[in-house]
Amino acid sequence: FLAHERRVRAKNCGKRPDQVPTAEGITVRIVNANDKTFSMLPNFREHFASQGKRGGKAAKADASALEYRSKTLLLFQKVEGVDLCLFCMHVQEYGKDCRQPNTRRAYLSYLDSVRYFKPDNITAFAGPGRCSAEEPKPRENPNGDSLRTLVYQELVMGYLQYLKNRGFTSMYIWACPPLAGDDYIFYVHPQRQKTPKSDRLREWYLKMLRKAKDHKIVEKTSNLWDLFFEGGKDHRVDPCRALELPYFEGDYIPGALDEYLSKIYQEREEEKKASGKKSKKTFKGSSSRGKSKRTAMSESVDTQVMSRLGDQIKNMKEDFIMVHLQPSCSYCRKYILAPEKRFTCKTCPNFELCERCYKDDCGLDERSRHPTGSLAVHEFKETIGPEVKDTSDPDPSMECEIFETRQTFLSLCQGNHYQFDTFRRAKHSSMMVLYHLHNPAAPAFTSSCNVCSRELEPGQGFRCSVCTDYDVCAVCKNKPGFSHPHELKKQSSQTDSRVSRMSEEERRARQEQLRKTMQLLVHASSCQDKKCPHPSCFKVKMLFQHSLTCQTKATGGCQYCRRMWALLQLHAKSCTTPNCPVPRCRDLKQYRRFAQ
Image 1 (tube, rainbow, N blue to C red):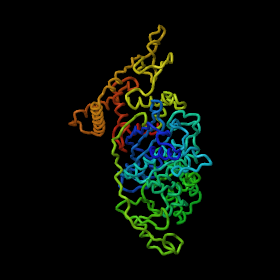
Image 2 (spheres, rainbow, N blue to C red):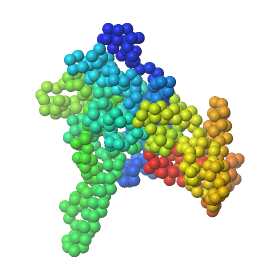
Image 3 (cartoon, one colour):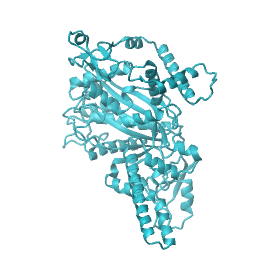
Image 4 (cartoon, rainbow, N blue to C red):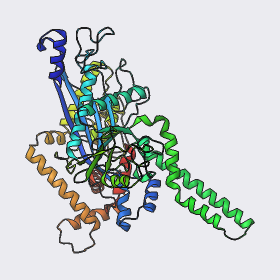
């Protein structure tokens, strides 16, 4: 893309390509790719369990868990000899094995950038006047966008193509800018970089998606309200249930659904109490009218919640963008994939039917057939839906603690003052980001002396074994009048130097050992055999027993409890089992979810 843009711009300027500036030294990296489980919110989970009737208890246990792969993508550009971190994107990938309604869907959860891209103030594909009012806009860039904008859009388009090639059917985008002064990913943006309004951010995405459609990456775009709510232009038959709405972690919809369900159940409880008091005062027996009213009350939860949610998001429906990567049926909203037949209207653009809906349409009278209300029946072209892959990721999982969530990285930047408001600070912050990426065992947060407030280097100073956050430098500790009620232990830097000297084979061996330890933890948690042949099962059980009876605990400095707590946290970080037998796993997963 950059080479093509440079050639076109050079031609428009009447120069050779090497005589016009272009973006150089760009690097794109996936820095985090780990599997997670998102548990549905309480009210929605209860509602789902009461509605779902597939597979009994197993289905109910599985109903509350949605498995996905979380990824973080970074873009760097080498400027003045330093790789500047300029762009970050967080995505969630729900594969073919994830249950409906998230099967084969992706969610672009967060996107952020800082304005230090070079060359600056260059309109892509433009001539000498840089697309002034008098000069016509170039064909490749009719909107007169900057080179920086098109590079970021190309990056998102490339990711969409990557999803389509892997067999994903759609991607959901919630165009929600941060409030003025707030930060999503990068801490403190440059003053000259304005926070986009909702309509401007939405138009940024739509421009990119229109270009993706021209490149045959995207089939079509819609929005959540038009697709799933009554009155929407893409909503044609059968009212949609709340269970059919895409349900992504961190999105607006799950929280709104849970809130409305809570209100509806509360209102119904109040109605029942009120009707019970009234029936005691004037008892006249049961009536069929009363029964039908009670039946309607029990069956209309979906209708009520969808109606309230639809009214809520109708005025901002354009912000909830649905990107269709594969053809979908215009009636039942199901994606048409091989070997199923696909029927495309020869007259109407973007109107397609699956085989079942096409047969139903053919069985109607002429006035009811497509297009509805017209005597002229449109012809359809029959083809086979596209063949898709199984969405499996060819790349292995990769854990990066500082980029596990956008809040984790933002907290790291806030705690260490990794700011991006000036070019000098952005260079320092980017170098520190790269340092933490290449040294995952290094301490993420710097500590300071609680007496003189001087910053302590890693491995320097003394730390209290009882107080949660008490550090002191050697100078203050050795002063005559210094005293502290608890024992102070010298901090060690041996771990960092040892990890940095580890070879790739040693690192793999360590990861394999950690994997076996996690398997042993799960085994020991569910093992009931007192004479288990596994050599280490008894040791883990003893650790469990010790942690139940220990009075010192991990916070008091007990080494056994600290070891067990570290193992439990490591397990919960990668666990995707809904009803995991490991102690405290559910609590730790819930805590991690709230911390995001």
